Image (cartoon, rainbow, N blue to C red; front, top):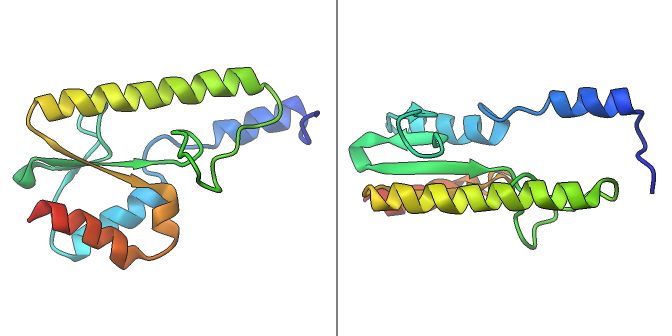
Length: 136
């Protein structure tokens, strides 16, 4: 199946996708801040530069994009029909990096909470409860 966009349009679309300060990250950061939590973002000193770092609780929160991190069973994770092999390799590498960074963080004594993009589209009370339950 051919791509519905020209090569230049596809290139432009992909260049507009952010790796930091994504909409799901910002939603969670605003919620945490409104609940009185203070944090740092993308701490370069920690493995994988976690999205949100709550130093006081020795906890990091990774906000994973369902597509980019291969959220199994999620409606937002669909392998593209063009360059399928390349995409599978790319997403597999992302998942391996996630696992490696999580292991390294845990070895350093950090609690790691993973939140998926799709979770931020539904019930945010549930998401904040997942996070705060693990912090206390």
